[in-house]
Image 1 (cartoon, helix red, strand yellow):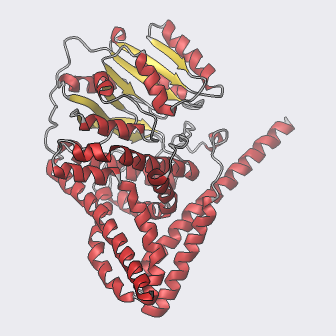
Image 2: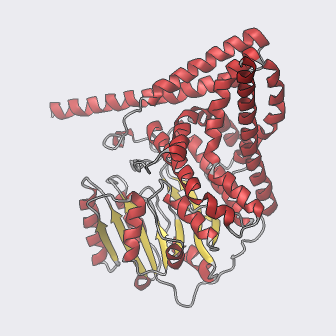
Image 3: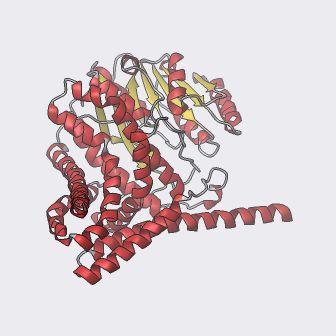
Length: 497
């Protein structure tokens, strides 16, 4: 019985190593495809401006966005697109004074001739997907643009994207996310590198090689008939963008991506907000997997596209694998340490993610040395989020309900480091930090025990785990303390006044 138990432990440990190697190799495939095709002309490039510009509806889903909604609406009102071909819908589910701010802005721009309207829902049924679906009923545009409240599109965005739809097979066009506050703090700087890796390398590789890819929820342009033909926006997952993207491509619609068209956006500066965002994406991606795995496997796509599509949808599964590796290292190291000899074979794939980020040069991080310095902190954040995202994956796989869509709060942050606005919408810390602290101590204890028994070889990786969990939990507590001190000063000032 004991041998059977140890055999199961060893098997699970090797399985986690193989799993992480698979996702690492997927990053390597993305890098190779990117290098092969980055200079290849876009398959639809060269689209000339149409004789008559098609009618476009711009949808702006908002929920309690008092700090960013004016910036967003003013940016849309500045579009240099023919006014008689443009409709703007502000799809507002707010429960605070944001609605009044929107109404004032809508009236202001409507008086100047912009076709803009406020569609306010008193209930948030279906969350963002529900708002987009409701707005689509009244949309008059042939093309539908979507922007979240933390994005600031340039005035020529439509002029650069609409001509790509000369191909009637094109269902959705994604543009690249830029950053408004990448240098606000270390967290936002690391996020900017992670996002650049996705948009510069992965999205380019997937679009240029006609693989399954996803609309990223904002800064994209849809053909309205594609949305309708694919079943519309559906609220049964927390990642309505990923869900609709795959349903559309399974139906035969094509997606494309313009890496040179950039829309700057605000990055979450609060670690708890970032964790909630990652949790939602992790859970929603596995809800989408459960929903679409059969249609995907039965689709007419070549087998390799199906495989790469499954790896794409299940990308967050790397976090349960990371957590499982940590938890299993102690029993494996004590009872069957010979299993550790397989680790070097699996470590080859560990070099692929850093390589992807090092190659993702943008206007924000153009120098290789700057990206190189950020790799350690990005690694720490990735390992530190493994518990948070594992819970999201498990809820997505085994949860019976969709769950609540917890939006990522925005504060109109830039690189000027104005902390005072992180007050009204700041999220309270989650009790999960105590489990993260516990995992930090577990990793440290495991490292001490295995070093005494086997030598120092395993200690570096266990130190990475330990530092990562301590960093995430410590940053949570630190930002909570900053917020408390800020609110105390504001209350004292108000009392003195």
